[in-house]
Image (cartoon, rainbow, N blue to C red; front, side, top):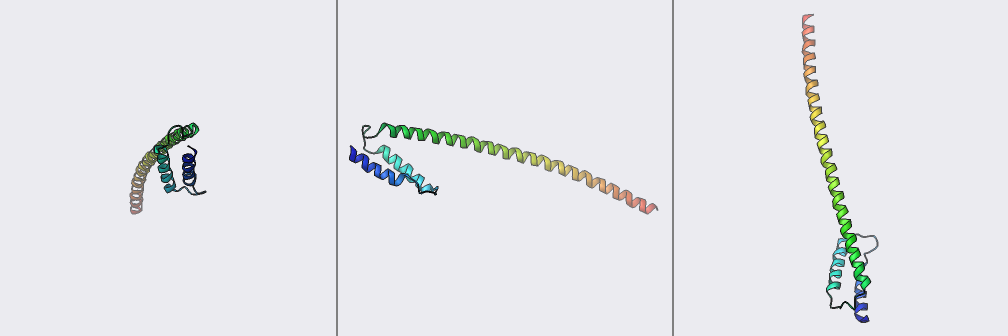
Length: 120
């Protein structure tokens, strides 16, 4: 019993802690694989400490919560982006209308100015 745990613990301790400041995806994949291997190994439930399975359950729940919060945050971010784009489109349309009006007023003023110069 203890020999299988110590050999398993040796594998997990060498492969389960990431290098200090790297967020390496390969480590995550390796850890996930190690975790799956750990759970599907030939150890009986007697060999696995109950606190380990409880810790795994807690880690899984925390990960699920983190993923859910991240999804919500991403959805809010997309909504803000969409709202901002809509506001900019409306502002663009308004400015184009104003530009068109100003151009017509300039043309009218210019034509009146030429008419006044020609009559003098």
